Length: 236
Image 1 (tube, rainbow, N blue to C red):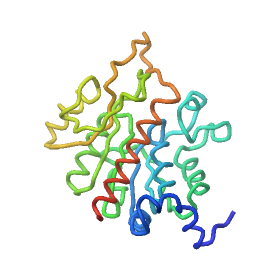
Image 2 (cartoon, helix red, strand yellow):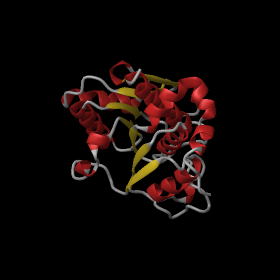
Image 3 (cartoon, rainbow, N blue to C red):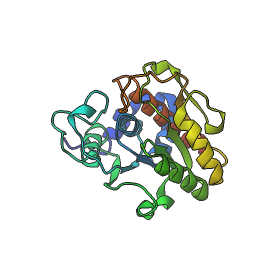
Image 4 (cartoon, one colour):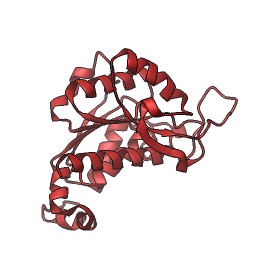
């Protein structure tokens, strides 16, 4: 279905009641880069699109498999085997046809970091799995003066209400945040806002992290909310 430009007013009519026309225009003119499109990042990306963010840079190099379907928004029977960036772009075009998506089907690291158009990015949402990529994103954000929110571990967690947003240096309970604190300090990163869970990890007896439908999405939605509010506050 083709949407005329004037349909944008109706699409975001309920949101305009909260943030006004100026707020909608600010979001429409903003670019958010989402790294990782799994259970956390997928929900974050769609929430940003539904909030009216005008441009999304989506970064992931994985494809969907059956075990993703219990928690990853873009994983359906129709997208199994499909590249995550392609599935995300296809769905976002359906929920916000005014959102421009740049899909980067890459593994983010030192050798691919320059493929991101950092000068166009207003905010970074980090939902990648690897510690090295998370640290690099924090370093890039500090170097470029870009706002960032990073998701800590959601595996082996069962209580969605235990999530909090905090500076990584003030977190507790989260094993990933503990590792991040040491590495970030070594790289000279002074602050990193993170979404983390205050729940003690569930002991499963498996080396593969357990995960359920209602935990990773909550982290992703919190990240999206933090990004939107940060962008609006920066233009207040």
